[in-house]
Amino acid sequence: MSAETAQTLDRGLRLLSVLAREDQPRGLSVTELAARLGVSRPAVYRLLATLEQHGMVWRDAGGLARLGLGLLPLARAVTPLLGEVATPLLRQLAEDTGATAHLTVAESGPGGDAVAVAVVEPSHTDMHVAYRVGTRHSLERGAAGRAILAARNGGGDSFVVTEGELQPGATGIAAPLRGVAGLEASVGLIAIGSALDPARVGPQVVATAAAIAAIATALSARG
Image (tube, rainbow, N blue to C red):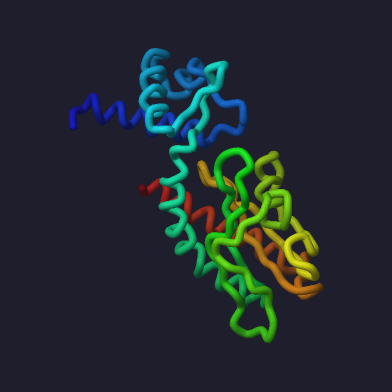
């Protein structure tokens, strides 16, 4: 691989990273991308054209660029690793609280659901909520989805509590993963009735989410 080809690849990956970190849903213009990458506008046009061919970027009628749906298969391929990384921490959370712990991610694209990618049930309780990997629901329902939306809207520094939104009689508590580029996710607990005391377990959920986010960030930087 020539130095020029490696440089082009590096720029393309950096462009995707810039778009992944972009908080504004409107996307970024060629001028904005050129400034952030420190390259010329023609270079950005060439990068965008190539990435568009692979569905990794798309531009609207005004020329604003966003991440494309072609990245979804790559994201899905990485999801099992994320669940594997999270499982030991979720297990500790489940055992400490006596509730079912889960890691939920938001699917990319308009109308994307919240999908559970790792679930751990406590081993010492007589009764707990059965929750399965692959369970999906709207982001507008349940603590896991609402925590993701809170972070998306600039909040989400604490935790979210819901009652009966996914299962009658069940209480959910969730906190978002923050600071992981390109990933919208949350850590949550779900239990029957009033078994969960938000004041007691809420900070534990927040701490677990922060720990998983730190590991995910480190793996991303290493990769």
